[in-house]
Structure formats: C-alpha cells, structure tokens
Length: 181
Image 1: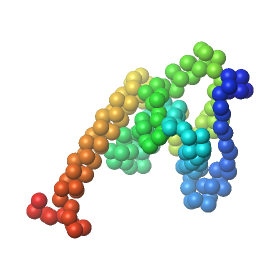
Image 2 (image 1 turned 120 degrees about the horizontal axis):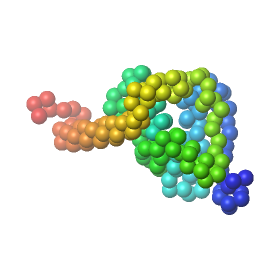
Image 3 (image 1 turned 90 degrees about the vertical axis):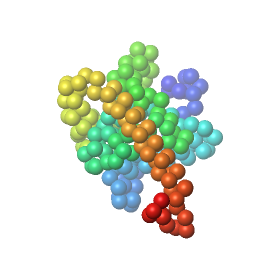
C-alpha cells in the first residue's frame, strides 16, 4: 500500500526455500540468499535496471565477518560484505540497523522484518543476539570499527590480487611458470 499510494513500482516474489535447499543440498539460509539474489537479478533484467540496491547494514557486515571468522576465512571472507558486486550496491553498509530503523520510524515509513530474525535458529541469529551485544558492551563503537577494518582488508585483498595478476601476466607462459623468474 505504501508503494501504491506513491506510484512506486513494487516487485515481489515467493518460493519454497526448504524444497530448494533440499534439492540443492544447501542450508536454508544459503538457499534463501541464492533465491533472493536470483529473483533480484531476474527482476533487474526484466525491467532493465542498471543497479540493485540492498539494505545491508553495518550490523549485517559484522555478522558476516564473525560468521566467516568462525568458519575459517581468508582476506576475502574477512573483508565482509562488499559494497559493490556486479550490479548489486549496498549504500547503507556503514549505517547501523538502529540508525536505519530510526530513520524509517521518524518519517513514518513502514518496513518489514523477517520474523525468523528474532529466533536463534541459525548461526547468524546467534551471533546477532548473543555475540555482538557482548562485543558492543566491550566497545560501543564495535560496528564502526568492523566497517573500517573490512574496508582496509578489502583494499589489501584487491592490492594483493592486482600484484598476483600482474605477476601471472608477466611470467605465465605455455601453462607454466619459470621458477627462476
């Protein structure tokens, strides 16, 4: 109704996450993520959109970093959620969830939150409800510091990849490297 009243185009979709997860051999969180991005990409193509903007926040980024850290990650995983990947942009990545909700509330803009976000039924929610509050008690600027750190890590990762690509381009010949180079 919010979009209809303002003449804003709205595209929505639905799917059976459990069935998709089972068929693809994925956990429900990963299956839902893949289904969401598939829907967004197909919709963007259908309407000829040049960008897809998501509402990921600094909270989401910190959760992702901690999840990646607990599972084992290199620079790419510790770099958190990229601000841009392909046509997907994440303009609110440095804002906290609290800031976004306050903005919406102050302007009377309705929003919907997935009811499963309140349940500790997946690792991300356990990190969200149990781990991050403790880290924020230790350092109230925890989310800000994670944002800065992930930005630095992404820059380092990009720099290392650029060096590696330059080396490969210069030294890789006939499907091999010259060890003396």
